[in-house]
Structure formats: structure tokens, C-alpha cells
Amino acid sequence: MVPCGFPAGRYKMEKRNPTQHRMTRRAAAHDYSAPGLYHITLHVAEALGQPLGRIVGDLSAPDGTPSAPHPTLSPIGQMVEHELLTAIAAHYPMIEIQDYIIMPEHLHFILEVHSTLITQNGKQATLGQVIAGFKKGCNRHYWEITGQQAASQQGKLAGTNKGAFSTPSPAAPQIAPDAPAIGGEDAARDDAARKDVTGVDSARKVAARKDAAGNDAAQKDAAGVAAVVGAPAVFPQVVSSSPAAQPATSAQPATFKVPGTASTGRPSLFASGYCDVMPLHGGQLATQRQYIKDNPRSRLLRMSNREQLTVRRGGIATALTPAALRGYLQRECPPHLATVEALAAIEDQLLITTETPTGIAGGKTASHTVPSGFPAGQSAPAGSNTPSSPAGNPRFITCDTFGNRALLTERRLLPVVCHRRDTARFGEQKARCLDAAAQGAVLISACISPKEREIINESVHRGFPTIVIHDNGFTDRYHPSAESLALCVSGRLLFVSPWKFQYRGKDEQVTVPLCKAMNCVAQALCRTKDSWWKVCS
Image (cartoon, rainbow, N blue to C red; front, side, top):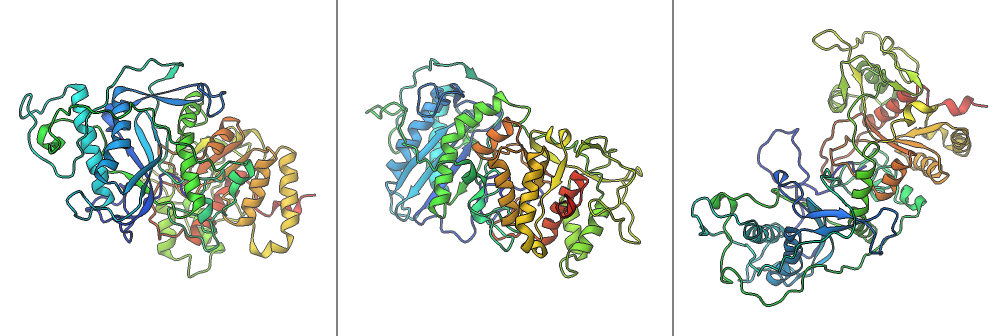
């Protein structure tokens, strides 16, 4: 599962606190001078707010119509669009900008490198140099538009920086909005590989519990719920709304090198770094393109439904203690997997609170007096004690959520966990799960195995409310697929995570104990064993 950021692989980085992960890593083994397709994301500097424009339109209007949600660009946004479509190709003719969208505080674009990156003076270049040059060129025009002068020399540009792009600025007319605008929005995207409704990058959800950017132990298959919902693979036409590039007199000679922010004391338009995704096959590329196309609609949807479409931290009572979970994992996992180190790593990733769990889950008030053996109904192993905080309060596992929290309280919750030992009875299990959902129960699953995903996909297809447990935490900018957003708004979907967010590199695998832990949390939230379907009439 890819929870919160477009998978960017890894890159060599300076020494830093290991908990402060960033999604701007580069894939260590990839040649960033070689031909390839990339999905690039750039953010403006946080202090600038939303300088590139605003989103306008009507959510009820279909895509492709004038009233459909779309960005209305400010003069700065128009400048960025002009630079994107002209300056990069002018300096690197082997680069083609394909699909793109400029949002109020960030932009996405598909960039294709057709041949090895070479600078105008014949030297080999990298994608990082291309992006750096683009950002520096935008900085120069941004300073011109805003009238900012170098702190060191009033009215005079000082210093030189290599690799900056220098193109004439386009005319920047003021924008007259053609629809009511939504202003002051939060950043509404999560730089993450777009997921199906199970919250995962399905193409990577394959048997051995691994994944390129954060996955489950039994990855979610390529069909996913997006296929159930019928999400089209759209390749939008790229039509530039920027002013046509016309001959103009540049404020500086063509050989001028744009000074950096450090040498001039002026702020940068963009935040440092960038996120990149390398689409490896047609399905991934189609998903990236659809995500870019859906950005304006998703933004308006979020602004109109903040309650459901905002990550909510904590407040979900599982009545499950780390000690009880540890005992469960020791019973369920082979000894060579349930090592002291592995269990300690699991506990370190958990969201834990010392507050009395007064929340409600599964339609029942959470009990903090019996934190022993959810969900198996067994007490913790002999000799184990419930860890306490320094103040002596017991510690409980809690959860963050995204979507309709009311699903945890309004109906009966039933866990969907498919074991290999029950393979022969899968048809029976699926029928009983769907029958229970038809009678008003809410199915909850980590969607680890293909069979679990099959049940959840069918539940969604039939319009039944569903809860999905993530295998990673939510970033503040968590942003699932457009189909998932629509299901959350309709009140039929809730994403739950008992984990802190952790960056996962391309080769990092989700472990069996972590998958078992998610199954345990599912049963704890339901206050029901995963074998309930075997005894129901």
C-alpha cells in the first residue's frame, strides 16, 4: 500500500534524524540522465500560501465542460506555465512536457526524456539539473513580477548560478474568475502513487508481501476497487492556456545567469527538492495521468467536504494494548518471524496513547479495564505485563482516520480475514460476508490477500459501507484516488491506520508480523474474532 507520497525511490542524502523522512528521495540505482517517463511534483514555498492561482468551477459539471472544476491562474501561475511549456524544451530539446496541472500551491507534470540528457555545451546532465534550472528561471520572473530586488545590491542583480533557464516573461493579464472561487484551501494532495479504493497501489500488491513504495504483506492485486468502480484510464489532451510565446525583449541578455536566493537575499518561489515517480508500465502511466486530470475536482471536493476528507488524528479506541498485540503476534507468527527485534519494530511504528480510551468502536463503548486479548478473546501470555506510561497509565493502540468515522459507531463491524487453511471454504466465507453487509454490517479489512480484496471490492461494488486498514500512517496531505474520495464523501468508506507514517524505499518489504498486526487491529475494532463467519447461521 502506498499511503502518502508518490513513490520516489531513494537517493543518497545527508545525515539527518531518521524519523524525518522526505518523499524527495531518488531511486539509488536509476540513471537520471537516461531516457524515461517521470511524474514530477513541485511545491511552492510554504510561506507563500497559494500564489499560483485558485480552483473554480462546479462539482456537478462534467469534465470537459467550461464549468467543470479547473484552475484559474494568477500572473505568477501563468508565468510558471509559460516556463514549463517553453523554457525546459528550449534548453533540453530531448525533453517533452506532456500532461500537467498547475494548482494553487503545487504543480504536477509528466515529463518524457527521449534521449540522454545533454546540456547546450555538450555535457551530460541529470533530471535534477533540469528541475533546478526551471526553478531558478521561475524565481527570476517571480522576482520581476513581485518587484523584489537583491538585498545586497538595490536594483542590481548580483552573483551567478549555473544551469538557470532564462526566457522572456509572458504578458501577465489579471484573471477575471468565471465562477465562484474556493480560497484558502489546504494542500489537497498526497504525493503518493494513486491507489484503488482499498488504499493501495494495486499493481504492486503481489503475493510475497513487498512493494516499491510501501505495501502490504500480501499486496493488493492490479484489479483493485478502481476497476470495480469502473475508473477510466483517461489520457487528457494537453492544451496550454498560457499566452502564446511571442518575441519579446528579455530584461537580461540571453547569456545572463540567474542568481540564487542565497546570493540575493530574496525568497524562492518553490520549496526545495521535488518528487518524482517513474511509471514502469502503461497501467501506472494511465493512473498518473488520471490523477493529474482529477486534481481540480478533488480539490473542490475536499473543500466542500472537510469533515470526511481530512485526516483526523487519534480518538479511535481499540482497547488493545501493545502487550496484548505482542502476545497475539507470538501466537500467530512463526518463531523465526516473531523475534524480539521484529516485535519491537512493530511496536515502535504504532500510534499509542496513554489516555483512557473513551471513544466508541464497533458500536460498543471501549473498555480500558480488559486490555488483554483482543481479538482472540484470550488473555496476554503468562508473564507479560501491560506497559505503562511514566505516570502509571496503561498504553493503548489508537488509530488515525480518513473518511466517514461514523461507520465505526453506527453499525455492527465484522472483520474480513482470509486464512490459507480456509481456502476450500472461501466461497462460503465470501457469501456470508456479503450477506452480513447486505443486512447492515460494515466489513473491515486490511485487504492483504487477493481473496480479502475480492470480498471488499464486491462489497463496494454493491454499495455497502466498508472500512479499510492501511499498512502505513497518513501524511497531512493524504490523498487517495478520486473514486475513493467520492466514496468517502458518500459516507461509504473509511480508511483507518494504527501506524505512524514511515517512508519506505523501493526494496523495503512489509513483514508478516505487520500484516498479522493489522488483522489483530481489525478484530479489536470489531470486538469480534475473524472466524465469526464459520459459526453464523
